Length: 508
Image 1 (cartoon, rainbow, N blue to C red):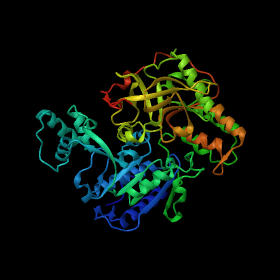
Image 2 (image 1 turned 180 degrees about the vertical axis):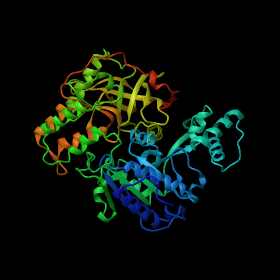
Image 3 (image 1 turned 30 degrees about the vertical axis):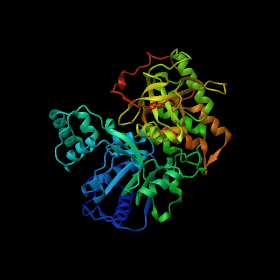
Image 4 (image 1 turned 90 degrees about the vertical axis):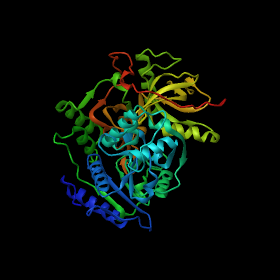
């Protein structure tokens, strides 16, 4: 197989060759387009690092295409054929649903790490349909699914090569056939992990157990996980197994957002000089906005990014006030962030059900309204394949200068949520939005404190991460003021049939 028709830069071509060499040692020849049976041997781990705009996602996309052309099957986390163990396979993983959805929008078939570590147990009827669609079984006869629906599912699979998408074409949902979840016991083959700067040591070890051939894609300028003492998992990978992309690629119309992000690498750059640079870019290009206030309409779908927790709470309080939200309840359309699950060990299956639906720590959701049962909330999980769920919820609304949060909804146990109109820059890692507002006074506070992380001023690392969350427009907010909303909060842009999660089958 020849290299892709597109033209790689020198460092991208070198990175391609290094990954191809690693895969060749594992029995996958990208040049010839041949997959040999998997070889036993030592696990292979490689790190491919590069800052925003260096071409990591392009390389990842082209590697996926080359692997598929060589005969390797993609493992999506939706369904795995029993014959998968007989074939070479690969998976593209991201730490969060949001990060995975960003990759999928760029044509990379990604799923979450959690969806691979925990595999679904399907109803036998689903398996019969899936095997037939994949050409590995006879056309099934199922009492509740008519011939016309099966025809639509077959036609859908020819287009998308996805079992859940095919069932959706027939008016069915793959998640309806899931009877439970189990931790993966069988290893997989080749794993590509994006946003690996977000991984902690435990996740890394889990991935190494599952994938004998693992490539980590990451940005060394991101913020390390808070429990990692400023280090990222790829920092411990041997130098000979590390590749770094240095050239920054720009679209035909240069990106002022990337220009600002990479200007932060200048060690002599001070905060005030950087702000003047932002102001100049804003005068030249409307993709950068020098904002004298926070645009409250944007906060419902993309949070304001801040450094300090106190700032986050004040902005959330102001957001709710400007929409006249009552203190005792949420308004449909308010954004939330999943803060974890409060479930005892005996309810492990319920935990897996929640996490499989995308309700993992850090997930961004939109509140749609109360559920049919006390303590339940209807939610839209941003970036999830089946985004709308009804789940037992514990919602916490923090208030300025008050130690204890107000709790408008509280099931006995379930998913816990904080308000999501503003989030810390740490929690925003791995996500991307079309438009992002960065609260500059917080970064100035970090600059004045003079804190350093991993050898670089903390304000620069914060600014880099915050700026690169924006794909189309960056708002650099310089004053602590909010605009007035142009209308009420809305949910009509999120309409999808809901899937109930029966979390309280017992008295819990």
